[in-house]
Image: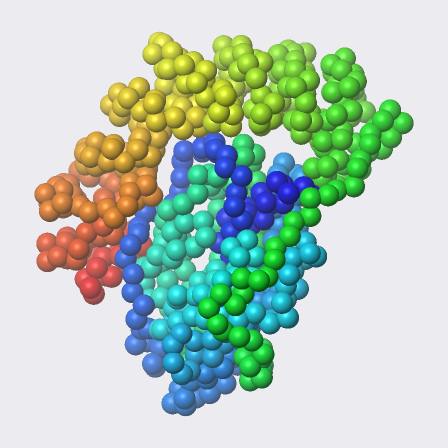
Length: 587
């Protein structure tokens, strides 16, 4: 795997569960096509107090407990962490590996506490990367939270920086808390039940412009020992992201289980400032050359279809480019070529890295004799060729906008925005085209999605009128797009008070909280929010969203607590909102 793809694969694994190291991502824009985000909206409310309920928990039969509630907490602890990661794109496996390491630390004595990472077995690493047998780090710990982790000068690209993210995942809190993780701020609602802690995602505030999250799921369960210290973790995360113009599927599991500590390990390392700066990081830039010819083409295609990889995709693409359009069209029309193989052929053209590959994809898109599925695949592939892309791609997509097949036309419009985002040389032309298109009769939802995918703030003034659209889906896309611009915050706050539709209100709250720094709601605006919440005709989901926005972004004043009490007495309030109201009253 070459350097760029390795960086992409490993950085994407950061995105999955924010448990892998940060590599400097290739700066590249992303597409945001899915505008119906299902995440609830909360942030910036935290508490690290261990609940009194734990004091009454019966640890007598707890198999993980090594002490009684009255005994002195252990100071020396050790754990084995295993991280299993898989990254795929359109069926192509980009990365599939299992990494493991042991962590031991001492929470007694003077802060900062000392810890050691050892017994490291990383399948994902280049052998030339220096992995020491024992690597020291320091940290603080209080009431369930690991904080202030220092890797003592370890280079930021070194894989053992995973320790910082693992300790963040190993932390727990009482109620709502925001964690700063490698890919941004994540807000969770923690629930403690005896010696078990679970959490649910409340909202994200991604700090990266290199990807867009399309969907995600997570299960997270932490077991505590008798002293309420984290003992065992199991986390499973799945995420679909848009990155470098490609849709990536990521799966990751993290387990941390207690092992027997060894008091001698801490004595094996130095904890001086900058002591870990000496460890070098290497990448494997070489890959075996693959040559595809007429004799081995079908065999290579069959093998690639069964076990795809990017190097073979490029080799197949180069072969197809050299053979020309007639050869490619005959293959796509052949009864001997399966649907999966046709998808592989189109992907190979995308990965060819040749201008002729763009021409072939353009011909495929415009050929009415070919199937809809293959033409849709070609539309999505032609915009992902990076520096190869030219006016050929743009004009081809423009020609498809008024096609009798509306799905082809809609997909072409969305991908025009992606094309302008992917290739800076195309941004000006795409912006000019979308500006003209938006002013034409009948423009609306699809054009707004394309503008959102383009991500050019020059279009904001053209989008503003759509805040008054009669269609909620158009207003939703418009507010999501405008929320990226801090200057639009007053406009969106006003829109949030006046819009009835929960999907629009949700897009505003999420957008403002994601893109605003140190959000402060004025007393006047808080009063307007409270007044809106008291209106009898407000929809229940809209009421929940507005209350969460108020609770998470304003001080727990007497007036706001009064609103929280009203929420507890109101019919139809969601469980998460009731929990948030109770949390506010406790502050």
